[in-house]
Amino acid sequence: IAHGKPQRAPAWWQGKREKLLALAEAGTPRYVYDLATVRERARSLIGIESIDRCFYAMKANSHPAVLKAIVGEGFGLECVSLAEIERVFEAVPHMAPERVLFTPSFAPRREYEEALRRGVIVTLDNIEALQRWPETFRGRTLWLRLDLGHGEGHHEKVRTGGVAAKFGLPLARFDAFVEEARQLGVRISGLHAHLGSGIDDPQHWRGVYASLAGLADSVGTIETIDIGGGLPVAYTPEAPQFDLGQWRAGLAEIKAAYPRYGLIVEPGRYLVAESGVLLLHATQVVEKDGVRRVGCDAGMNALMRPAMYEAYHGIQNLSRYDDADTAIFDVVGPVCESSDVLGRARPLPAATAEGDTILVADAGAYGMAMANTYNLRALPAEEIVE
Ligand code: LLP
Image (tube, rainbow, N blue to C red; front, side, top):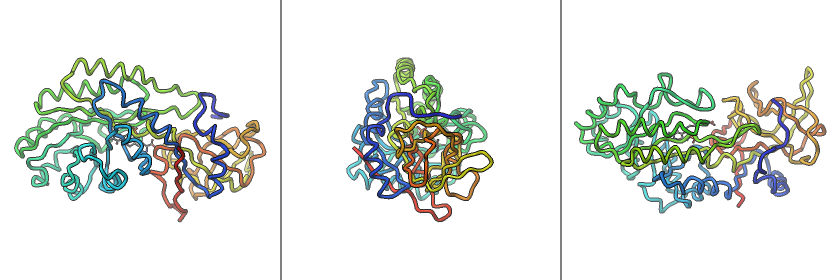
């Protein structure tokens, strides 16, 4: 699908084009994050009265300045590895451990032990961990992640529920887990579910809360219900903005129906996606069999999302921003894979040429976080603007 310049409300970077061109001169690939956008997104969630606590899923973007800004707005942080936990306490040394949540997948025993030693909240998502490592968990307070039987999200690879997914305790084993925990003196104080990423339906989360609240009553020790992340952002020009008002109304209603539990959300993408752009330089413009391609100095090594999920990111030629987008290009990277395409059939100025600065929009979430050194290419640089 071809799209031209953004039609919706101007993105932060549209007013900072000169600054971005100057930053690109310091070298590309380079991610640039706007902290004002991060703070604004964080504030839009932190003020919602039915939500008791928000945790930012730092896997989306773990830049220390981003973490500090989000914690400064009142968020806790959700981590999935020991290295993420360590990053938290480096970036925010005074962080209270109870504002850190550890939700790993198939982590080694050592990571659970270290997380417990540090006093962060630990979530288990299978019964085998309790059975194999009883001494690690005996007498502890834990949260339990459940698989509600189905996944949701923008691509099958980001759906985290159902038989094909590795995450979560299936409902059929819930009673067995509760019994196993009772025998070990483990107190289950939170129930958690995260069904996927980029979920468009604003009513999805109230359904998750209702399902978990129904189960919580039978456990007796549950204080909090974590309904996961997964809030979407509008990547394509025609995608509707997520209806936060409806989301909020749905949560208020369901919270009123089950007022006993603290409601927790843990979004990642929503806070950071639109805050980030990836700056590249064009390397070559090549025509082959009627397809015109502009090559860039990074591709799927810097931003995996298009190759991995067919994800759409807006692409602009910043050096010729005032020119009309009159030609159609595939925008590709230098990696030796056919999937190394950042965007197909994109309208760009016809004069697009070697040395132009190319901007890839909405790249603040799962961009740098998933960058790699394939083909021995260097990782992108990162830059913060206020
Ligand atoms: N909580 C848990 C347990 C998660 O696994 C995730 C994301 C989140 C919260 C935050 O989800 P978000 O609000 O960002 O949708 N690389 C993919 C997304 C993978 C998400 C992994 N888990 C992408 O670029 O679309």
